[in-house]
Length: 637
Image 1 (cartoon, one colour):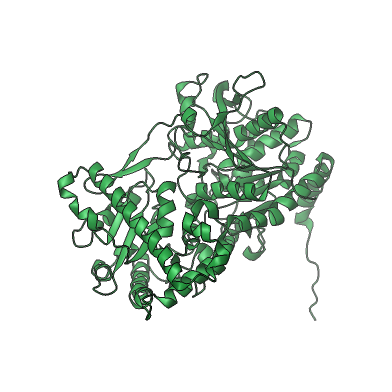
Image 2: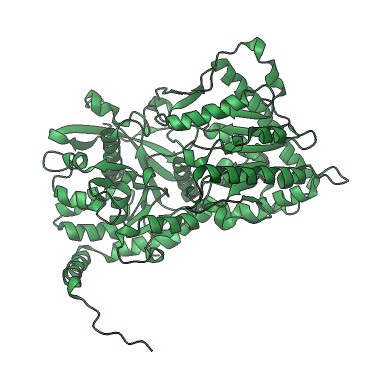
């Protein structure tokens, strides 16, 4: 059929369910939706990740609104996991070698995501020393060496875990290896080591591995990529460490930024991912363009538009993110549903969100030290008949959590308008090491604490899947205002759209390619290098206020003779029937299969070791002779 018999999908995080908290944000949620959609479609995917003993952190607030992190211990035996065992019942052990020959062992846990097995490696085993047990302590924690060890375990250990799983279960070996961001790039090196052990030389093994590898980049900024000091990486490979059969210089050459504008002493995980993959993609059309420019140095002499990085726009898994009431109606019915029923559905979802917000806000204030007697005001927070805006995501600076606070007097007027009020629900976590992000959270919380507006704007701590599944359906408008073009895709607005929520967003990520006035509104951007950041934020915040005041709120409150906002309901209907099918993870996975997985499987089969050796020899000859190629004469007619 040309389709792969099996595909290995590597990711540092997976957002499958709130009961398995192994995700921090969009990358993990996307990975979880990818596995679920593959199961729905019968795509033979196998997931590979790490099991973090503390997961990502739980968030609460201090009395003055400062983010506080908590790391509860997760017991794998209480999670929806089973341990991978040998035929005699002994737990499988995956070995790695650390500098000086020290061993690092990991066990393998399996989660079943529909028909897709997900393998998670865990270093917290008795055979390890204290330091080694802590390798999988928490997601995105620790310093450079800690992160490097996590990524070695994910990539190298992940391939070894796959081999053990296939040996024990009879599952077909993967023909295609998909690396979701650069964190798992070492999986290609382990597969090169396997082929060298079978008698291939490095160049032959490299070509054979590249043929079946797909690399997806999720970041539009170099700062979002893991980069390690050359000496740190060199110390972890070689004769008394990992991958002893491969020269350290060959390993380093795959990741070093040896191109104009690069830092030649840094080992870049995304660069290695691209050099080890024959196929690469960004996660929206705009992000594909940004990625071709960002990584153009790897293809010297090519114009950016010719750089071989394509794009597959992300999607979301409808059964996970759609409210049960919306699911029961089914997309086909929305075109025929009477306005009154569609409006009542939206009010039901809004009412449920209001109840949940009050409950979560009460719990948050109790954690902040407030007594029951001073919290009576929470019973009046939000109104199920007021235009409700949602804003929830991670809190790096480029997502601009506090853009809405740029002109606080104007925001207050919008919130307290006597005829067309607006209410806003905000949630999000700053990375534990990002004090700038924590200051943004605190600034927003302090505004939300103001007695004049606290019934109209709330901040909910500890944003996660459980909260999101009520937040998306209950909002009327989903707000997204990143610095364009720094949002690679941004899938939260897709989840909102599946529930009939309209998007109000900067033209970035997926909204840049699918925006239509029928679905929502585009916030104008002040692009260009000539404009400074402060001026840009002022202009774009003013444009946001104008949209809310002059177009969004009037349309929501413009009621017909029947008491329903006909033009608003028409936009909801178009969002559900026309935009909804585009944003599905099923569409995304189909594109991966047709455009990336199936071609990679064909390349893998065609490039056996003999063919790979021939290709490697040809490339070597061409590279050696290329400096002698010259253009002797040109005629133009």
